[in-house]
Image (cartoon, rainbow, N blue to C red; front, side, top):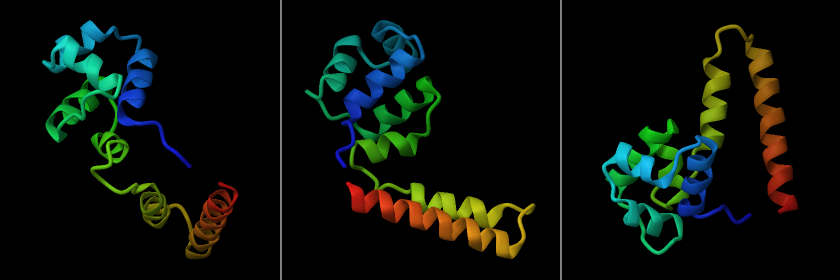
Amino acid sequence: PQLPDVGTFIKEQREKSSLSIRKLAEITGVSNPYLSQIERGVRKPSAEILRSIADALSIRTETLYEKAGLLDEQEGPEVLAAIDGDAQLTTSQKQALKEIYVSFVSIEQEES
């Protein structure tokens, strides 16, 4: 499945946060024209700029890195680690949840 490019994702997150591009520029210290170019896919932002945008939008920096192709998607391993780390679940409950998660992810990938 094609993920939206990082610029489109940033624009969506900015709009969800009800921030104008000017306000985001002010918060991040990145110029308004440069942010506009990132959102339109004309420019590929550096890791440092992605970090400042993520901070301003209150989203995980890793999420923007993944969208920009700087990191592989880590969601699956994080979900499994979260299940393993939950002290309220028994070992058998953890195993069942992990099996269900993996089966859903596998089905989703086959349908794509």
